[in-house]
Length: 415
View 1 (cartoon, helix red, strand yellow):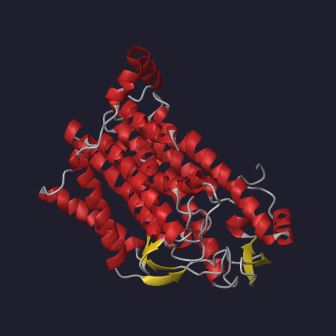
View 2 (tube, one colour):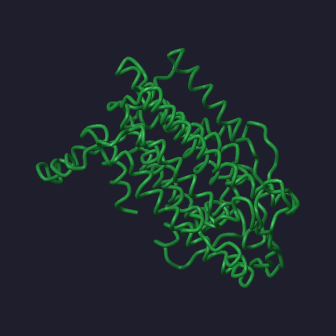
View 3 (cartoon, rainbow, N blue to C red):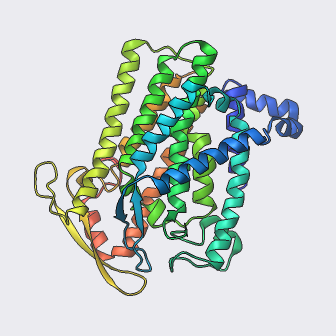
């Protein structure tokens, strides 16, 4: 909670001012000490704050105003069923259309966003701190549902959150806004800004930047295509809205997830047509498999376990559990298709996709790969064990039976 905000800032500083060299950062600290670190910290400007406010307001307006079908999320621990408006794809397409129209008409300068990015990160740090204080107060005094409460520890409640589904009014879901519309949509817009900045600085778009940004956009489009599935994941259905989740989406995502493209602005790598195409195809294949595995499980559940999997009737397990109010429920656990290979197979192509959009940065520096390893690798491993523990507590003997049928966690036949 204290080190990560500084890490995000100094990652930006190292990638943009020190050629992405960890050794150069070490030498900088040795030579300049704390005074140098303070001088390198980009304080938020009014212009940076205006960019953050405008983007946040736009995403809130699109979330509320665009049409979309009603989607019911999973039953919560207290027996609540959240309802969402599924309009993520529409919001993504409108956002990108506004980006290109604003850029071409001169209303908006993507390269200026790149120049201001350090200040934008600082502004996001301050905003996210204030936002998390608001969430703490709201969860304590005006929760949106019964899925809220305190542990008795102010620090713990602030970090992990007070509410599972905080909302303003009946329809503005705050976790969707922070996670999907500020975090994921911000990622999409920022890497386009970096590509535009490279064109302005270098006079052309390098194939490395084109491939990296293309793969990220494919992944983000896939995310919004599958947004209803995301509402059923651990982030939304299990983790409460606190500093861990909301600061991560408001600051960590724009700082870390965009870092390969941020580095490439001033350090273009020339792969050539064959190399660039090979990376793009491999990355696109990984993204498709990631999407198809998530889609396969979602369709299976929505069909009540009747949908065929890879052309065959699915192998499934009916698991019973009780909600917090004592109501008996059942879940269907898929044991065939991608989900017969490993219990969390979808993490494997996600890691592969991340590797392929980091790879265009070349091999001269390790820092552009930080998103892939150690960050995403350790994050998904942690989620694997957390999800297994949660499912074991939820389903009991049925989960033991499921683990015997699907013994591997992520990598088939290995782990």
